[in-house]
Image (tube, rainbow over all chains, first blue to last red; front, side):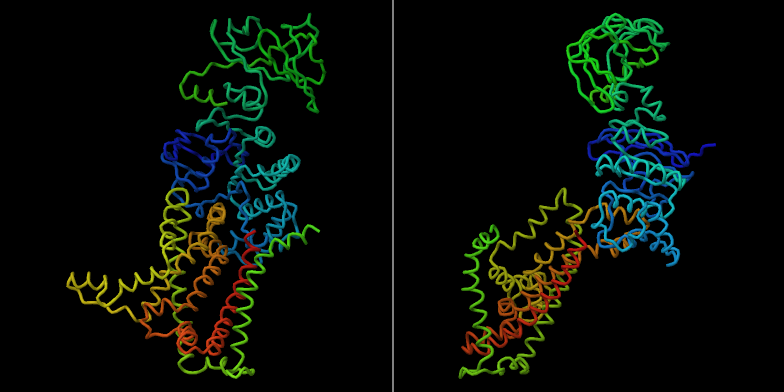
Length: 357
Length: 273
């Protein structure tokens, strides 16, 4: 049975005239890896800082294990944070950095020594006790920052874009490292990032945010395969986002071409947003396609080719392992299962959200 | 090859400092270590132990220390406030503090003389309010006041710089790890601003130790600091040997101070980077 650990109720926060969060409701389960994902300025970091106690919400409550902690100072919360730029104390060596929280809480020397050694082992940096933070690489400093947070055995670890400053390879390694750590420690992770790949790789639950509103909450599969609006579809991975008209159940018209799909319940002749992932557009010989078009762009991406195909008045983005040279005539085929139909945004807020990306 | 060429760029400065720093310094050393007949003698160095000189030196150290401590106590909280408000009104407040420094140092001190005089501005206001007059001018207190007023910006600026270099997230991290605001100050803020504090102390203590203008104007030539004694030896007694001898003793204090500074600053910078 899942248990609510943190419950954010009706959180609003503005800085001056800038409304950053508007009536945000979100709960985080025990032992969950939850990622707040969104473009910069979407309110994800503010949400994290409210959980950590570094910002007070203008309205709303933060409930932690049933207790209202909205006005509790950061040092009184059973939560630790890994900061974006690590924030290691530059005048202390690694051991002193990691021991900081334990010393403050008055643990015994022996306990602290064991705990520091254990934490360093956990992040694969044993033997670094006497080094100074500035003698470590970015990735190592990051791991020390994590070690410094987890020795205090928090119920929740808050991570604010912790991998943002690392290079690609290191970032990928650290993603696996974080998943391993989370499984070993069994604590709840709340992770903030603007990197959709990071979010998809690590999370149990992804919360997509934009302009202070939660757009969608779901598992990585849900978010990727069933984006609930155009913003989510566009933000998570590449996509072909096209205006369409839902003619009837299971039949959508895109730029005059009828596509079969599996969505029902939209009514008849209703304008909708259609999302088709580039890897779901199959290139076939012209006779077999629903549409025919011409390849106008070709880029080799390593795993696949990325092609632009002009067809039916729209430039389709196509990912395929099969290469079609620029200028060749191709047919486009999309499996009905791979067509995602979404309602057009109704409220003004959602409109604003659409305009953003 | 390139480095050798660059050395020539410092040529003008080397000539300047040879003419106006090194040669005068050697002359001071020469006069300080010789008697009037030109022979080697330590008599003007040991002259510092004469009661009136010793008293002046001791008073200089004492008043400089008091001024430095007062500057530090005034500056640190102010610098913290300035750093916190750095986005809004901080630069305006800094400007207000630097503004008096654009006025001539002598003028500022004479202004204080006018304020503090027996029939000066402060006592006029007090008597208008039917309050008893205060006697500040020509006391050590007036000298300390003058030192603090004149040298305060030299304490604020290095501390402000050290504070503004600290990543704000370090404070958040300390709080996050369970430290309350006092513990955060003692364990994070204070150690990281040691270089600023040390250079602030140097920049207040050394000019305070060597001043003779402030003590002249606000001490009314009754309270002699070591600077006044040296000035009198050069100008009134025309005894360059005695003046140079005492200058050398004073220099020892400054060198000690600078050594302490460089040690603390080396540690500080290592930690800051």
